[in-house]
Image (tube, rainbow, N blue to C red):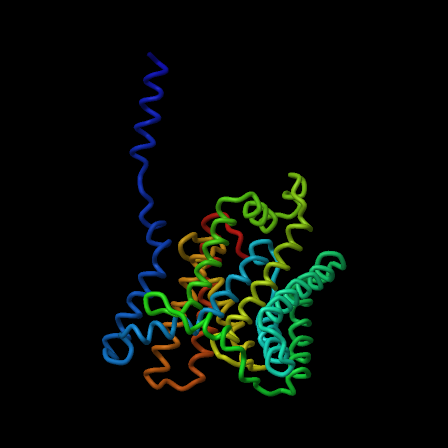
Length: 336
């Protein structure tokens, strides 16, 4: 009889567990602010901003930034920084231009080579960061400068147009619900990452390594292998973002890819304040990317000067890290 009473009490306690409304609000606050931002711009520009064509263009044009932000959160979760993702994107897009347009190589072979470049970049980073113990900020900052120089060398510092039409069609030519496929590639990447992060042992290992490498090592996790995998995956995703970038633009620009770096980092940290606050998470990152995209697009359509974009992105990054630190003060977090 006592056992049945205990079970009843446990069941009652479970069923009547109070809902933490503040926590729930925190999870979806950015979505609410995003909705309010859309409403504000729509009221200000009902004809130009609030139409499906505008959102379709925005979703497609920021798909490379979304992939780049997803690339950033993989090593961040494991406790490393990769500042070179923007340069890797630029190198990948420029390689497509040089090999496909100037050297007339088949586009499928070029894409394989580009993804191979991503693997190579990740392995080189791993060599210096993990085996030579050089801080990840130093290594990836140095490789950014190195890859930028290589890009200027192979492209003669010029934009290369005329990329194979099949890549352009695969990125922005074909549409579903009026939105180019580029957007859905980013969504699929987020879906795969979400499944790995939340439901596979690899995701838990990444999280444990990021929160405490010595503790993870004492628990039998191969910390160095996990970090190598994270750095390689980051570079491969950045290369994939370069492929998408070349497909969306139809050309290879040796400079503008680096402009994605600050927005991508801002989105990574801002995304860690929503959906799963206190954790770098794919869905929060996607929401943050398009929240920033909405702000930049709306301000641009209002005729705001170009410098405001940098102010907006920089302020968003500072605010995101600040909110992340506040969140970290209340509960355990893998940020920082």
